[in-house]
Every structure is written in structure tokens, then in C-alpha cells.
Image 1 (tube, helix red, strand yellow):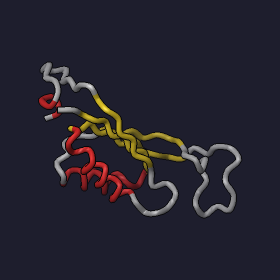
Image 2: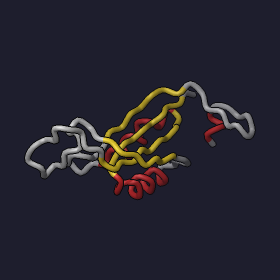
Image 3: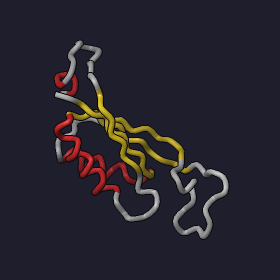
Length: 115
């Protein structure tokens, strides 16, 4: 069984709904990091007439998940549904392969380390 790392960067007010939706589909863990950053809009808000000339770093959060490959599509669909507003700042989702997971306390590896 393979594993993937799913990283989501989004605005600060979206965590509660994403966390609740992921819990409902059986995701058992996540890491959330508060950060500042900007995307291609360089921190320009949607209602501003002109794009910022210099990057403006905005408060963001990064949600990190490690899941089995067979549920990646389901997890990504849930995240997309919960984050979508159709406006600038909905976020980005990054999916990358993971070669192994090891639980330090017990030495368990792979699927056993995620359960």
C-alpha cells in the first residue's frame, strides 16, 4: 500500500469546516501550521483595483495530511468542496508521494504507523 502527503494552503478562517468534513470520512490526523504568504496575486485582495507592485504577505494556514493512496482522491475532493468560494484566496492543494511512514515510539511502519 502506498501513501501520499497532502498539503493545503488556505486562508485562516477555513480550518473548522475542513477538519469536520475530513473527520466524517475517517481521516484520523492532521497537522496545521500558521504561516504568512501570498500566491500569484501577490497579496492583492479581490476588491482592490490594481495588483500590488510588491508582495504583501497575508495570514494563511497550511494543513498537512498523510493518507493511504486509495483515499487521496476522496480527501482532495472533500478539501476542494470545503474551500471553494470562487474568490481569490480559496487556496492550493499539493499532493506528493510518500515512501514510508514510521511511528517512532513503536517502530511500526507503513499502514500500521498511520492507524
